[in-house]
Each structure stands twice: as structure tokens, then as C-alpha cells.
Image (tube, rainbow, N blue to C red):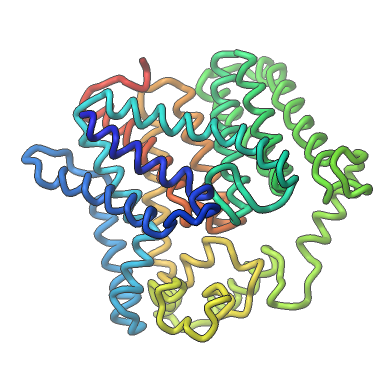
Length: 425
């Protein structure tokens, strides 16, 4: 039992300290590989057990695997390495860890995993303050989790906000409002502009679901909505003043001018005629038009599972560019994961994958667990969906994002299968 705790602790420590490890250049690739191998080791132990629970969505996972093989090997002539690498980034380690969680018989091990994840998320706040004190509000140095991936701040902040708002709505304890504010401030240490839209959107969704759970009548909904609206206005006001991009003075603590902020957002999303530097909306439109003009088989199965991975041998032309820039000429705006998924495995593979994510959400929302767990899971799920469709590749490039969602689901699934109740203790 103690050894298992050490193994799980080491896995999450490596993933959560990835930025720190990269910063001091302490064998980052080797440690990342070690964490993945440890997940494989825990999975192998489950396979050797005579009694184990059948993992959820297994048929869909096998079907997704088959589609990746057809797409990469058969239709597009890519190698086994490229196909495997794509599948590994897409879902493999998260799903293997899910299987490990649902078959863990010892409650104390699972509780330890939950505690260490919460501890590391909370650790990002003081790490953010230290970073700001040392280097200011730069895109680099995202807590302890990333050295260069600024978009990671948005996901970490959203996860923290989902947890804080869900706990506050159910328990009405002021410490969760403070935690929410701290994650909001943390998001601005890296000047993340998307927060001004994502925070209110996710808070509103969580609150709406809260009213459904509590069956609050219309009059009470209106009354209680004021607190959520007020919090959303606080978010907008704070981000406009804190983020130099949104105020006329271009500085921390600038004036509040919502018209200026909206004009900047409009300019930011539609200011490039150059394909390479297209904004996200521009790139998404361009790639959508490109995709629908392909042949029928390509639309169904994509241009090959593994084509847009760094494992592809065809990318030796220019290693300094991302695969999407190499193939399609788009640098900045093509970072959304939806482009990465659909272009490689087409509509068939994408539909299977998102069906798995949808069924995870549906399963959780149907369980008899504390309401705040359903609300937190909904918030995390929506944060990842927003990231995939509108923002970045962070959910796939960093285990702690998708890994947390699969782990949370695994704990809920385990409780139901084993008739345990650790989430409600």
C-alpha cells in the first residue's frame, strides 16, 4: 500500500512539477517517460489480477484504436510509431490510469491521490506569486507545471474556479470566494485574456446546473442570480484593469473602459490577412473549408492518425515549426486541439472520441453523489471542451488536465462499482 502511494505520488509530482523540471533542465524527457512507464506498471499489475472490473467505454476505445490504425497505417501509409504516438497523446495514458483507479481496492490510496492533486493545484497560487515577484507578468513560467506554455494558465485557473464556485454554491463558505479570487489573479500573472469570456461562461453554466439540482423556483433563481452576475462583473472589471491588453494605459491597474476592451478583442480576432499569423477564428474557418473540400475518405478518416505529431518522419524539413505550420502554413491560430484531432482521424474518429467524453459526463451527472462533485466535474469537462474547440492543445499536451478529468471520473465510477462512498465522506 505504501509503495503504491509512493508510485502515484511520484507520477503526479513529475507531471505537476514539469515546468520546474524543465527550468532547471533536470532530465525532463526522461522523467516524463518515467511517469508514463509507472502508469504502465500499475496497469500491468491490474492485468495480472484474477478479479478486476471491466473498464467503461472499452468497446469505443477499441473502435477508436481500430479507426486510428485504418486512418494512419492503411489509408495514409504512416508508420506504427506515428499512429501509436497520436493515440498516446489523445487518450492512452489517461485511460490506462482510469483502469488503475477503478480497480484500486484500498480506499486510502485513492484518498491520497485526491489529496495530492488538490495540494498541487493549490500550490500553483503561491508559485504564481513567486513568479510574478521575480519576473513579472510574462507568458513564461506557469506555476510549477510549465515553462513556456502560457495557455496552461487558463486551464489551471478555470479548474480552480470550477472547484471554488461549486463548493461555495453548496457550502456558502467565504474561503471559496477567496480561493476563486486567487485563481483569477493567478490567471493574470500570465496576461491571459480568454479568462474574461471563459470565467463568466463557466460560472453561469455551473450556477444554472445548480438551480436544476436544487429545483429552485423562478423567483429564487432571479434573487440568487445576482451573486453570480456580480461575481462575473467583478471578473470582467478586474481583468480589464489588471490585463494591460484591455486598458488604454497598457499597464497593470489601468483604467476601466469596456468599449476599448471589446475593440481590442475584435481587433485581436480579426486582424491578420497573413495566413501564418491568423487568429484562432480565422484559422478555424480556413481549416474547416480546407477539410470539407477533401475527398470522402479523408473527411471520414482524416489525413492519418500521427501525421500532425512530432514523431512523423516527414517533419524533418523544419523541426522549429509545429506540424500544423509545416503542413498548412498556420502558426498561431491553428493551435486548437479540434483541428489536430479532426485533420488526423476525420469525422468518424472524432465522433467516437467525443462520444466517450460525453458519456463520461452523462454517467457522472446521473450518480447519487454530493451535488458539488457533479458541478465540479461539469465545470472541468466544459473547461476542457472549450480548450479543445476554441483555445489550445494544453488538454492533450499536459497529463494533469485530461488526467485529472479521467481520475475524477474513475473515483466516481469506482465508488459505484465497489459500493464505496469516499467522495461523500
